[in-house]
Image (cartoon, rainbow, N blue to C red):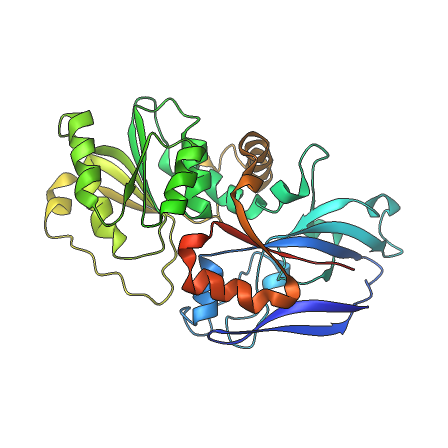
Length: 340
């Protein structure tokens, strides 16, 4: 039996390497991965070579040390079961279902501190969304959605869908989504959006906002499309003294934004949201452990496995990335599966 791992060899070139299954060190365990979630945002930037040269992978995650330089192994959402425990590890870990921020691979070794036990009442297919749900929770913390507010979410990929699902649980005045793809617009309705608009017709969204608000427009806007050009549409939909939360990472894609018109006089705040840290105003009371527990609670509420549209055996990983790159209109969440 071999370990199968996804390797980004160069832009648009993905291989699957087969090597020996590693033996855990005395203080480590071996996890047999059942499935891993592919990020259609960050991972596509890596796949396309649209990340800054030699940028650190993620200093906060032990499995993602080093820099973004080809060839590399990447990914951060693996769910599986502990099959072997080192002699210094509590035997109770054996057989436990776990989540790990780890590149796509059929087997991984890690210390128990790197593993997050999956609660007994959470299905593994839902648990694989933990990383994106934690991102969605962070978006809520940065956005501070308030009772009676009018909210718009640009981009209904997986992060956008989860954000929409969480926002639908707030007592908002209205919740609107925007996306270019009919499939994702349908998913946004299922996630709880009051109305969903085509990116190609921004006038329809703004007309609806003007009608609903008496011209005041949106109180809170989330930009989650991954497309820098969407920033102008976000500004156009935002009201006076409103907030625009930017959860997208654009990589090397330039963001040319028109700040000379409405933005200048409207006191609009543009706020970067990123899951690797907690918003400063929460630091007195919150820890990453508390945020993680909240993400599990939201997974229980949302049941995000319904957003899985495609499953590929890891041996066909190249097909999975080509699908996301070339036919994104067909996809929401793509996962890789592993056997043996």
